[in-house]
Length: 117
Picture 1 (cartoon, helix red, strand yellow):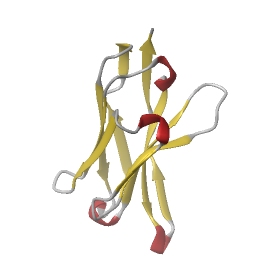
Picture 2: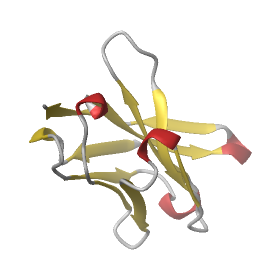
Picture 3: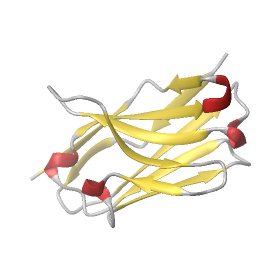
């Protein structure tokens, strides 16, 4: 059974930092592209950051220079370090695991991040 369990969300003031974690089980973690998405109320889910099995990263323009995605294949965990948070970063953040060759696409349950002004 595949599980992606996010943690680390919460309430923080603007300018603050949070570190999200996503622990995966039931998949061969190292071969998956791991991503963080977010969905704000009334908006579509959007990609925040992704990291390939080889460690290449990709970021949404809105978070470049503030967020850092990383992965620890030994711990089957992906992280999102979020610095200089802004109120517009408020959303539910979802972890995603994707393996294109087999069309595997898995989601976590989400963790709420709220940034107060």
